Amino acid sequence: MILEATVAMGFAAVLALVMMKASMIGLTGNQWTIMQTLTDAYLTRETALANRLPVADLTATTSQWPDPTVDTPQRYETTVTLGKLPGGAAVLGNLVRFRTNETQQDDATTASSVYRLYSILSYQIGDKEYFKSRSTLRLQ
Image (cartoon, rainbow, N blue to C red):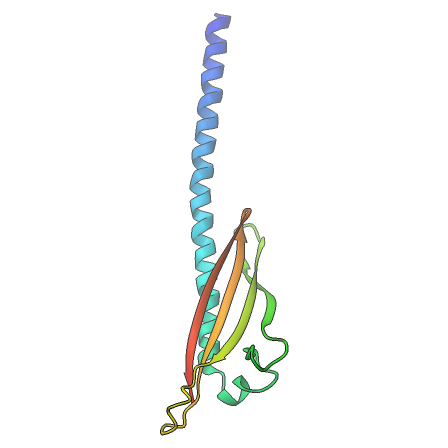
């Protein structure tokens, strides 16, 4: 009788561990989806900001998208809050912005200026670091 009870308890413990591992795997996939949604939403906001920023503010010396060939500092770097996970834990990322001048020098007939604005977001999930980027082309 004691042997049967011991085997039954051991089987119940193994079943409980298997069920716990399955639920943890399910939660891990959910966390990945949440992180992708948060980072995509933040970079959509970055694209909207890059599109609505006046060109005069873009080319100013205090621009949020500095030109690495002319401006100091060469990049705008800041830590941003991407959102919150279930349970209230804040998700942080590192945002880097800069611009490049894409104007063709041999095309003097249009006299237009072309700038490409880059936004690079880095974030961490567990012990791995991930990067996402968006670029926006602006024409004046």
